[in-house]
Image 1 (cartoon, one colour):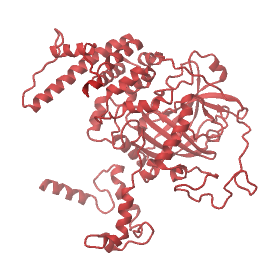
Image 2: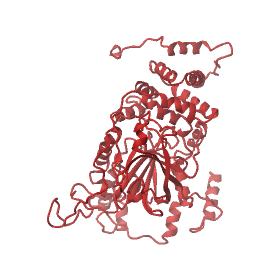
Image 3: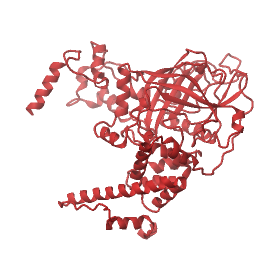
Image 4: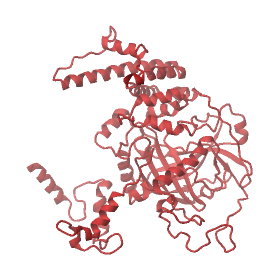
Amino acid sequence: MRPIIVHLLCLIIHVKGDDYVNVTYQPVQRQLLDFKKEHPHPIGLWTKNAGDPVEIRDTITINSDQFNNQLIIDSLSTFDGERIPERVVHSKGTGAFGYFEVTHDVSKYTYAHVFNEKGKKTPLVVRFSSTSQDAGGTDLGREVRGMAIKFYTNDGNLDMLCISVPVYLYRDPLVFLNLVHGQRRNPQTNLFDFTSLYDFITLKPSNIHQFFWALSDYGIPDGYRKMDAFPIHTFELANVHGETHYVRFNFRTEQGFSPLTTPQAAAIQAVDLDYFTRDLYNAIDSGDYPAWKLEMDVMTPHDIQKLNYNPFDVSRLWKNGTFFTVPIGRLVLNKNVENHFRDVEQAAYNPANLVPGIPGPVDFLFRGRRMFYRDTQNYRLGRNNNKILVNTPLYEKTYVRDGRPPTKLNMKNAPNYYPNSFHGPVPYVDEHRRWKKLLVLESNAVDLEPAWYFYNHILEDEAHRERFITNLAVSLVPVTPPVIQRAFKMLHLIDEDLAKRARAAYDVALAAAMALQAAAKATDQGVTPKRNYPTAEGPSKHNDTKRVYRLGIHHEHDFMDHH
């Protein structure tokens, strides 16, 4: 114990008063000391929930009349209810405040005030998140990440819900529930199950494209600051002349995209599950404000008529040469949140929160999202969630009243019905709003061309392609028949070279996993493990057995046979 005590004493000597002497702390480690430095004296009297001050003798409840001690009743009853339901997806996350500055006037394409007038700044809040992790999970999983942005515009809140890759998993909103269940924890084992994930993907092959992106270097960026973000949908914009354009927005990181390999992520994860969160907080607190350039890829109605693909399909990229790109502005994050629960956990982002000039996407997925995002926020935060501080628009006058708190001023004594002749809030006329809306008919047909294009063209070099195949093979190791056969069949349909290399990498990964299991089992039994690796003469007998099993020569028992 002596060396530990000496170390602590040295640390105390180095930190004198409120100054950091001979010690370098990260901003996340300094937070409490910084608070003390900003407040040299206690910030006020401790009160109970109703505001009456706490008497010091009530802070100890042993040998006291606990029933009449309102402090313990207040404290523990609120503690029991301080958790709200975590998000079904994107549970783990962090956030920050900042602003958006217009650098290029785009009034030619939209009359949305937020993107017009060069130099205009709009306050905003951003929430970053992983997709599949529980609230206490790791920042470093191989998965798609979220970047949800709430612009506090003069015309209401504009929410852009982005992900870290430019394609989405599915087109049909009904797929969402089953897809999420398929990639979450197994209902019996409570473990993540790659068999269920691949089972769903091979039965719904249109989902494979985004999965490929996640298995590549784009699957683990080096922190939230070094990833791009995409709102996914094709947005319909209108200008003051009633002219329509169709755009895809892109947020490009000014820090430069930087990935982590699987071994690098594993090494960081071993010591810091919150690496992304810590990196963002430290950067902002140190004045190294992260920024993204907002641009939009643009098509005209005339351009769309000449396409040989569906530009509203969220599961595919727009083809080069069919659009042009227009810069809009910069998103800068310059302020950390002061209270995570207030500013991040209670934040509600809804893709249906749009503003005049951006009537929104026209695809069927967006129609579904308009409904169920609002519903999940009503369940998680209550029906008045737009009156929570972080969700409150700059201007709001409504006929919505009452309900569970927060209701804020509840519109005070203004008329609570419309129409009325007593000067309640009145609607306006949007003279630029189009009378007609584009009707998009979509197909359920599966197109594997985007996945082929990703493998052959998005993966820019052989080294990246090799890392992608390795990650793919490792994810296939725990997959059981008959799903594994379908997975290789689907890879063959996408690209023969991909299927050939993936099977070879799978054999290597499977042999390594089996050797590791054998070594662990032998160690548990106190036996020196016998190495049973494949040799130049051919695979081991054990591997031969596995190969026969993979090819489908096996016995499947019906579920009822076990009952």
